Length: 366
Image (cartoon, rainbow, N blue to C red):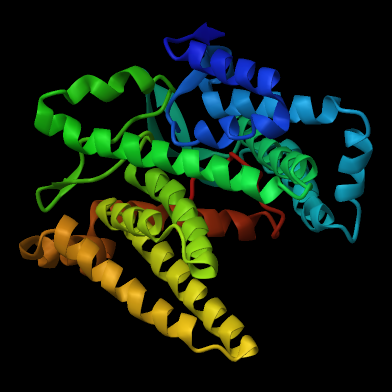
């Protein structure tokens, strides 16, 4: 186990949760999420796997919830067949069986693209399928996500639960925006290494990439796509809040601008899908209630915000260059061809395994 300079942050997060309790201290959990490249400890014995500050906060939150009387019984009730949590149990069973037995059942029979670490950096290379520390790491992370979901649903099922969640996501959003803004302006202020103190996980940080002279936004994450996933989740949350209550539009607009500024093709496509889904769902709801005011507002506001964000942050002269690099010629680029190769090999591995799959953490996909 290797301690790093950010280890105290994990201890502070755990101490706050223990002191405040899982409900009052719930905000600590989402507050750690914008720091996606900040390690609590690194584990060289497990192939350089990093436990993030968010992982330690999650484990502490789960332990505190389950330590309360009656919570364990409530958890089993939540995960029973027919309950909301029961819907994911078949997925969990497949994930566990696949991660434990898939790489052994088809070892050396199937070639996969896998992440290999050498000299502190990672490279995706074709290798014969074999069990690896990635199987265990990804299975633990998958289970951790499910456990947090179930424990949060149990702990926040009271009438003030929605307010607790709203406060937590609000804090996470402000931190995410702040860290992202710092990573964007730091080079212009001559403080290039200002973010290095928090980048302690064993991830290769791609924070120097630029397209058309515009630096991609990575914030507290290793690369633009990971940053975009976090931003997209927060944007979807605040867009729903804004559409239902009329509040939080400014947060949704800021996050939308950040999505565009990430300069990630995958993020842009996901953003369009989410926005279309939000509009269609809201229009459908309005038709059921025979209201026409909100859908018109939805259709009008979203394009205006998009237009303002594009004009302000992507600079009009650079739009053709960005369009060519991120959309028109994406499949001809090295990045596009690389990801196509990953996906083609992943699909082939699925069919080669007879549809059973080769296990979480065994291969690289996009």
